[in-house]
Length: 187
Image 1 (spheres, rainbow, N blue to C red):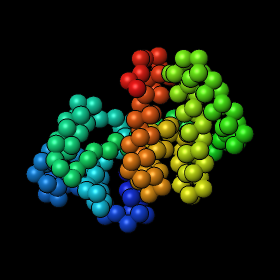
Image 2 (cartoon, rainbow, N blue to C red; image 1 turned 90 degrees about the horizontal axis):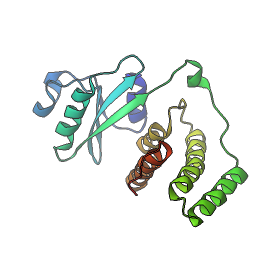
Image 3 (cartoon, helix red, strand yellow; image 1 turned 120 degrees about the horizontal axis):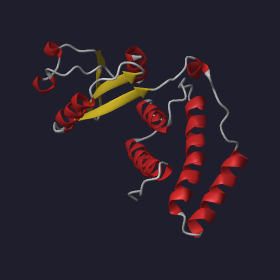
Image 4 (cartoon, rainbow, N blue to C red; image 1 turned 60 degrees about the vertical axis):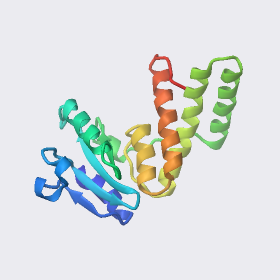
């Protein structure tokens, strides 16, 4: 899985260090074990890849994230492969049609009009995600059904979303997740 994550960056022309050793990383990263270090025009990205059965202590990942983000020009990214079954790799579920997307957007507007903003966001997000899935397929990205966060990240990594859109979508996704899981959203 680490190689698959690295290949996504390499296809875009970004240099990638795969599982770098302490001698190959800056002093502040020594003692950590990042899976990838990617060099982009915007800076460097430290990437950790988690696959089923290879979870690391979350405290170590949080420590790494804090260290990385405290250095200008560096950012941290967590790449999650939560495939539950091998068939998800090749499964391509149909996305909503344009008519279905329009119907959901209208339903979302109705929910917003009557004051159910969290519900409106959840319904609207299903349309947004359908468009994102279709975009990933039209760009030839072969992604298992991993969820919205990895989908948005993959589109950004592959250059299909600019940074501003990526950050906006990730913020919307955060609020949508809070609403969908029964928490007060931070709009």
